[in-house]
Length: 70
Image (tube, rainbow, N blue to C red; front, side, top):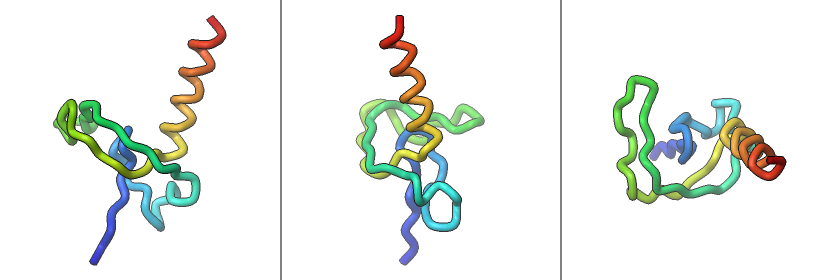
């Protein structure tokens, strides 16, 4: 059985061998997610439980810093 771990925020794979496995963190989400072509990966309100990749975590931290420094 193959397990594919996908970032709940960007949809990129974060399982072993992708370079995103070590720095992933547990996360969940329920907002709409589109791929690079604009196709819906997850509908708004569709709950997913999994991981957040380090890139998405860094983006969230930057947004938080911007919001708290205003």
